Structures are given as structure tokens and as C-alpha cells.
Image (cartoon, rainbow, N blue to C red; front, side, top):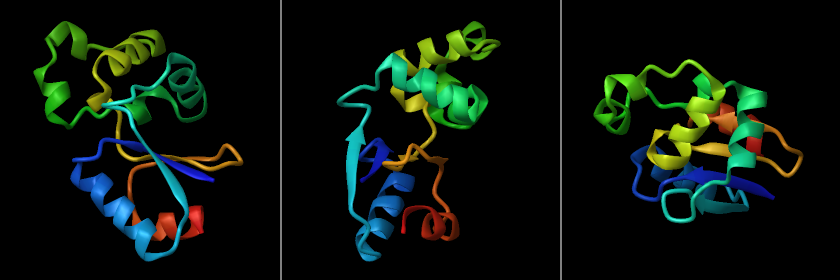
Length: 115
């Protein structure tokens, strides 16, 4: 089973979910704005992808952070901020049943990753 993590009202998420529906991909959707995301999962993602890959520094949530909060220098700081502000996590994060991870939506990558 493929799990897509993100926020329901995000335009990128809408594109990814629509793509999966149109291509017959069976998935589970986890809205981490509503359901949260646990610390262990974030730490595991950071170990595989690196925290810089996961933190969305181009979004409005990041821009609203104080300069001190924006100055993330460690994985621990990044995880704490992503837990406090789930909108900081890039979307979607796609996790396959085999444990593979993909961040972001690109139709060509999705085609080879989730099919």
C-alpha cells in the first residue's frame, strides 16, 4: 500500500491525489495537518531524505516563522518545527509499503515510483 502524506487543501496534494485516482493507484491519504505526524516517522524520514529535503522553506508557514526559528541548523530543530507546524513539511511525502520515500509531485517520477 502506498501512503500519501500531506494537507488536503494543498494544490500540489490535489494534483498528486488526482494523478493517483486517474492512474488507478491504490493509496491511503494521511492529512498531517489534522492527524499530525509522529516524531519517530519524521526522524526516520530525515535519516533517509535529510531534513533539508523535508522542510518547505518556500511556503508561507516558513516565512511567518521568526528569524530565529528559520535558522534551522540541526535535525532536532527541524523535527520539532515540523511537529509544531506540519505545514512546514514539503508535500506530498509518498511512502511505499517497501519503505521507499519520495517527496514532491512530478508526474514522471510518480509514474515510475507508485505504479
